Length: 361
Image (tube, rainbow, N blue to C red; front, side, top):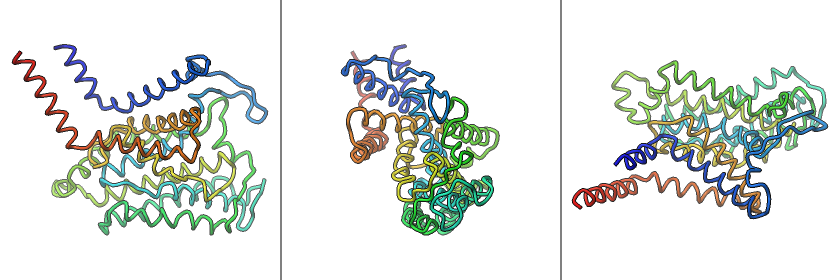
């Protein structure tokens, strides 16, 4: 009886799904390493490596996953809040990333300049402008969803289609290169630690403190569960939904800056490509319901890095980058199916029937 009770508690743990997912990915890596004759625990090995450009840095598969998954982790923060409040997803975050990166690099290089090593404006101006543009995009989406009552996927489809094209116009259909060390630091290394990991950690810490020290988290969940009841209780449901989209745009802007700094350029066609899918998958993999309501930010962050771990593992298994989205889509289908109310009701009915048979015996 105690064993059943313990297992029931484990299954009921809010982080059960994301933790089991990351454990499964680790297990696949261990099996693959054994199969190719490598060290079974090479996935977990972290070493210091000397490089010509960055000096001594931390190196290892886990470090690479944390580094490469940072943009999705940042996006997952905003996506979690949006899904919780509006019961919908913001499919424009990848394109907004691209737009913010293009705007930032265009300002830093100067309009019409395709490559530069000197900055046309102070670095802080370019960075803040790019992030502010992300906020404006979030406000646009939030206005359509909260105040015009347009369905989130339809509302965000506008910037999904237009933002990347606007970024190309800002850059004159060019890839704008900003070969400046002060700009490249945001996608490089700060000492031995990848800077994107530090930026992601700061974003997570700030929003976690905001949700814990204020009633914002409770308000968002209340609106997501029942916006009409929340409005009757005195909450401004529209303003709360608007605020979540604003925050989602803010984090998309930050992720765009990190992505462009990583390659020291604005490649409008490729920055943030398919990242909206990864962000949504991270939220779902984190154990959050895509139907809105209660959310688990920690689960979404674990889910984001799990997505990157899956991507890294697929590449190690010989899956090409063009085929990887197919496997991610299959994972989305499985997660949505697991969270479907009919399946949950069926499994609960089977469990109750089994317990009754056990009691009768």
